[in-house]
Image 1: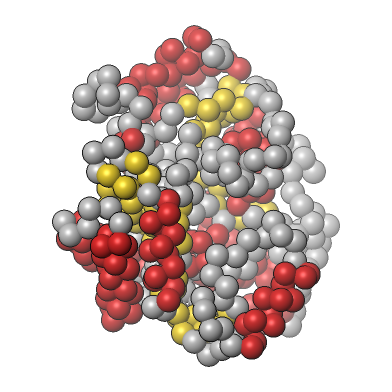
Image 2: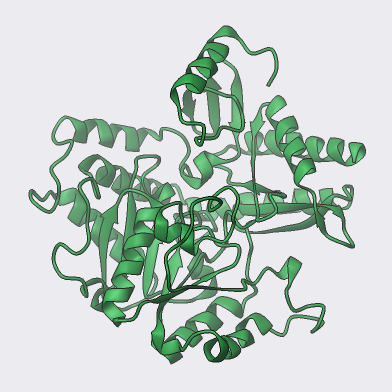
Length: 439
């Protein structure tokens, strides 16, 4: 952004001197405060937030009941370490998570700090429960930046480049990226060949009896908001059941009302064996969870899983109030409403803009894939960057995603007003049309 005021310039200079270069920033904005779907920077400029802290703020910035619960808890207990001195909010939130996870089997939960930590622990639990070591993940996946989660992640730059070698016994298979189907040139139409591929995979690559778990995001987030066809996730679950493989669902970005359901996997009617969650679980307070069938969650012995800060008292009360806020304000229904309005606007925009190759989403988790040519589907990374820049200049913060960095991902706070939604979508439309004209 140009013509920045002195506060921002000085802070950027301090940041460049003090913060590691690997910590990126794409906007140049220093946030002073935020409320609902509006961010105010240190210069007093207001921005509409269409990225929600990368999916952390489904309930918006600083929801009053959550803030008050944190303040009240801060007066009583900041930290104890649950493995030594227990506290009720941890148990109460575990009970709530168990009740929310899809499926009728008895459930149990453990808490950690980040989505990556949740995935790490889910993998550990699956290996301990099955006494197997192999893990299957998917192309276009993102599961985190730790050693194991980098290994599970698909996108090389910037997440994996220069950090290898990676964890052994991780096997990648094609995801259901329907817009760029691996098989469509050979088999016109969708024959679910991405599922049929597994029979060859278990013969040519690795025996199924070696695989402890398969992990997948129901809607792949960083991979480009990829929405699988109706048969894909149930088909994966059936394969896992037939081979004794645990089915881990990563709901870190797609959970907590984002897709119109509390968890995205509910849109496909599939019961996970283990489920990871984080981001919008606690309205911005660091917290994550692994929730799963009790028979698997209880496989590790006491002390095998856990961590010093996992399930911190402040985070647990924030989680309880955040879930209550979602339920009280019917944010699942609101996500569906936001999704309908947004998709309608984008489908109409697609008729006017030749650079929009695909528009896809579930509920309020929506991606716009930009291409240089609709026939060749050549990814338009540079044009995507221009759209993000033009939106920022007009006071709307959006971010990109996708293995080719050519997808605009919309993670609009579910508390956004209709007026704010309309204004933000108008800016997005104007930005895409401007880039279309320049292309």
